[in-house]
Length: 185
Image 1 (spheres, helix red, strand yellow):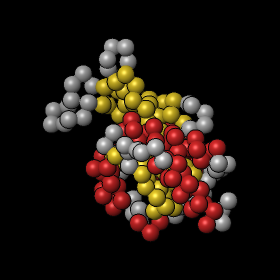
Image 2 (cartoon, one colour):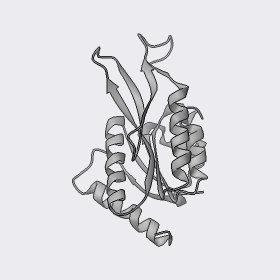
Image 3 (cartoon, helix red, strand yellow):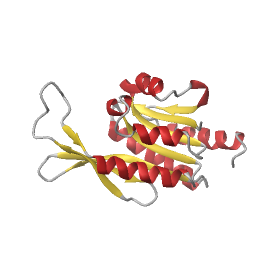
């Protein structure tokens, strides 16, 4: 199983921004990085949807679209689209074969139930990537750790937005150091 690192918090946009920043800094340090982040898109009409964005290429696929109103008994305003999750899974599988750090963003309630990016995460943790960098909502961490058997002993480091000026730099250095200690660099 790959080592893992985590960026978690309440704000999914802040998590994705931090993941993108860390990925760019790792690449600048000569570390190979792949995977995807999620991006909220607000349309001209004011409706929103979410895309997955592949790191390195900028390819995008829609993973949700806003419902006119939440389903009865649910507070969720999004309908999820299999084709977007399938694209993210394909990208992660392709990237895992060639990168040291694989980014998997958007882990939330859906994934804690084994759906959404859940199958992608299972494959990522078994992949050749040295570190799987996760982006997750903080209120789902316990369920995600239990569901995907994420041992604390394999945790390389964690970060939680909002971030001070040097937090991303220190976190990136921690990841580079972990790769070096493992003799993989």
